[in-house]
Image (cartoon, rainbow, N blue to C red; front, top):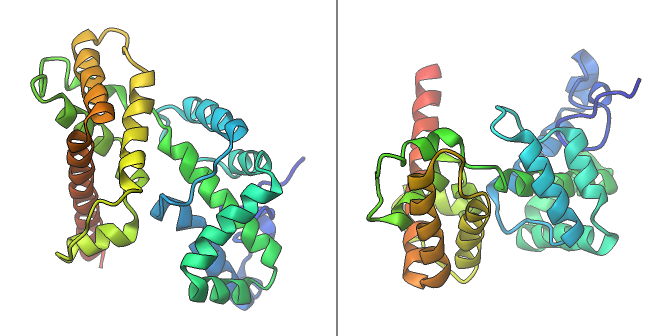
Length: 259
């Protein structure tokens, strides 16, 4: 029987990675902490996404398989996606992160010591995030629009659907969202518009939703507006940043209550 892969994306078995216990786990604490940090990189930084036709098809199929199930991309699914990327693309993804955060990358590599392992974990993190970017909008969100809600503001309906699907992270980085929370100026750059347009395009590809013609028509029109009009794309991007701020506020409130 094959051993379960560790969820951190290292490619090692869980038993030999974050499943360690006692003295062994304590002795490798910095390494395991560094791998856990790499595990989250893709979800926090949307510039870190694979570029590969073969991977795109796999990511779409895997996202559809997950559907609305309350689970993340499994280690096996992430590993299979990473294996579809050639060496040049894997190197590009690593360089994107390493060049942008050289000090953090050097520290992580020093703590893990096995550079090939940490590079694989970073690629797996980007794969995991790219698959989650393609999740379908929950049917319950569309049902809320079927009665005509936001019918006269279809771009706002798209923004609502995307924000409730936890897609703000596909457009904005964690750092940008934290700056926004701190009332620092956060501008919409050249990289944000393609990201924000990619999400409605994926949403539109799944329309119409069976049994929800009115909601489907509203969202279809909104997706077209975001694709055709820059001001609409910018407006949706701004609303998604607001949604990201709300997510962070809720998380902070939860942590505060837990403590």
